[in-house]
Image (cartoon, rainbow, N blue to C red; front, top):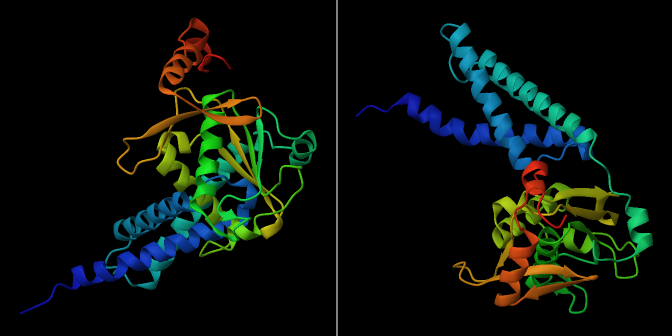
Length: 277
């Protein structure tokens, strides 16, 4: 009975490649900081692709190279780092013109129909424990902004506009940093609102560590966003902004709201914006 060296090498290489790709992604995120809005998993995919391209180039231009030879490893690492840096640089350049939220001005103006403050996103301050109801409240607010005229959700600030920070929420994560918090928040929105809706908000952090504030800038959605309560997707709610509060609409109200808010028009087609914006 003989073994297959190529399959054994592949089995060993896959987890090592994924770990290396994640490390490169973390390095790039650290280098670019807040200028880079791409998630860590997106950068991990990019760096994995770079490793694959590097190995391919080694096989094409260097005869007789094996997977674990220094030349192959260096070429794979260099190609991955170069591709990741190029993609991150392009993404940062595209986001350079995006308007930064003036958190101080938003806090000073207070809550409105387009601004909401949440002290925490996961931690129940009164009961002093992690609470899924806090997470649900975050999803409701984001859905309401998306279904209305857009708005900004500030996490880490109380109702009086005082900065509290994210330290309690960060403490609930395995890796207490902003990258992990954004990843958790995207996953939460994807689960409760759907992937398309979860991709719409722009997430920014203002401040460092646990003293930071997370600003979730929500544009008006081009189509209705429903919050899914049941795991089977059988129970959905339509949340909207009414004044400076978030409200769930009944079936009749939701039907009428959708018909009026997303009423098709010539302006809608030309501008690419939903009606009512």
